[in-house]
Image (cartoon, one colour):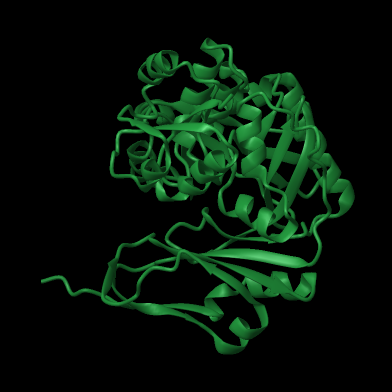
Length: 401
């Protein structure tokens, strides 16, 4: 009998998962508040209920007699997914655990309580509250919204003079209107990110990546590139896995995808910065392209309570990287230029390129992702740390009259 799967969201980046769910023979129902989102044309049924409306989605799900619920790659719908699944006794990670992981304020407190390595951190609702405690932090500190994604509203400061401006910025990106101050962890080597999948509470698959940042960018805390294999020694990689496994055990997380960001300090202490209860998107699809492991399929099967026990760890082969081309300026896009020799030697695929003819772009606009292949770790890291030498965005800045 055909299973009924409710999928939250129908944005362009979620189409791949909606199509996959259909391919797997499910009856697919999509829901969000944007009826023109492209994903809805691929589903069997669409309902106009916001993915953040927990009670609205719960009532919809109950009336539709669904067998599972999934929110692919969108942070905003993840708590709703867990809430609805738990109330309907469907497969999911526990709602309380998802809530902790989705809220930086709660997450930092939880890590501290459970004796993980964690920088001094505290959450606030107002600038005035933060000013009272500011002298207790060792500079520099990070100011972050408790609930934004994509490093929006994140900044690093080393004096109280900058606090009002950066708090205002953080609050503008927070739905809950809260922010945290946390001490900056000086890292050894690259920040490590990645995607993993748990089956019956055990880490079944993981891909660790080196995160690359544009230090001169308007948002130097947003990774623009990922490369792998991970450059960290194997004993540190194993420490990272152990920390994540320990955390998942404590949170009673059984079967499903996770993404994560960690930092390692000069004493080889591992700090878990963020955990997202979802697939990553770009990396998810690259893992399938290169290694043939379909994590979207496993995510759908997990949501429907189907067997995922055949998923296994695979060592990466070759030296790979992805780089997201992000505009630094607004204006008329004339094109994206990839240096000829670099393109010939390293470019494998250019996903979702924008139409360059007379297209007006905004600052921080995603102009597509390129998949790259290299012949060695050294070449990969050197090229990825200097991508603005190889990829240029040609923009005619619009004059302000």
